Amino acid sequence: MPSHFPEPLSKAIEEFSKFPGIGPKQAQRMVFYLLGLKEQEAKLIMDSISSAITQITYCPQCFNFSSKGETNQPQLCSVCGDSSRDEKIICVVEDPRDVSRFERIADYRGLYHVLGGAINNIDGVGPDSIRIGELLNRIEKSPVAELIMATNPNSAGDYTALYISNQLKDTGIQITRPARGLPMGGDLEYADDLTLGQAMAHRQNIGQSTNQNTDQKNQEKTQTVKENTSQNSTDNGESIS
Ligand SMILES: [Zn+2]
Image 1: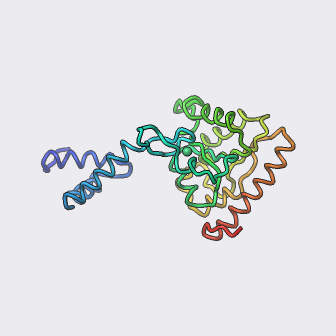
Image 2: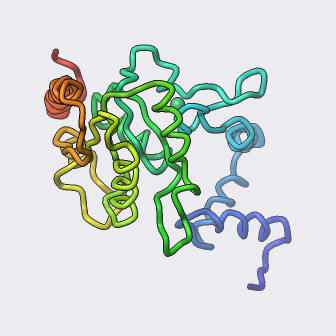
Image 3: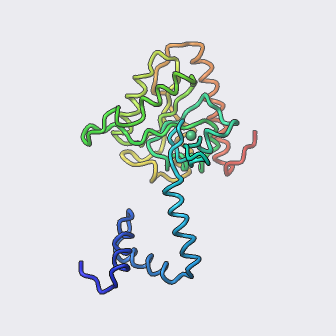
């Protein structure tokens, strides 16, 4: 599209309009805003974008967003690096943004595993294209009691949850899925905080354990987590226990 702006300006607008959900008019507004800033203020924004791009990487354990340390090596994310978290519970999600959703809504104290997508045969995304192998290796090295399959509530997310559940049958691990109220066919991204909190509190078994004792213990543990989550979701996240 021909532009009456000088070339560097039209180039900047073109680049900004590549952001998801940003059209040419909004891109124009953003670029004009930057141009209107003092040089130092504009530099702060540009530096923060630049360091996010060069410094942000994925946690080597759960693949949540993390940062590179002084050695330029990926560091454990803030969740994995928190020794007070319960390592026996892992919440499996598709995207690092889902981690921040769950961290915001409830008093969930377990860890996460970010798959980086869901199995989708139509799009050619097979089990090897996402981090299922990494999850299975992780569980083998550090056994868990419960896996919460919080993939998106759509057909790909459901299938992925079932696929992983089948891979882990006969291991004695309790496998649950957030339950009520999530919009079918949608993304977790679009669920409101209260609905997501309730869905986590009322998660249901989808995997059949074969170990009676582990099952019993896990049931008690899940009940405690559920009660805590339930209480906290009505208490603005402040623990009363
Ligand atoms: Zn991590």
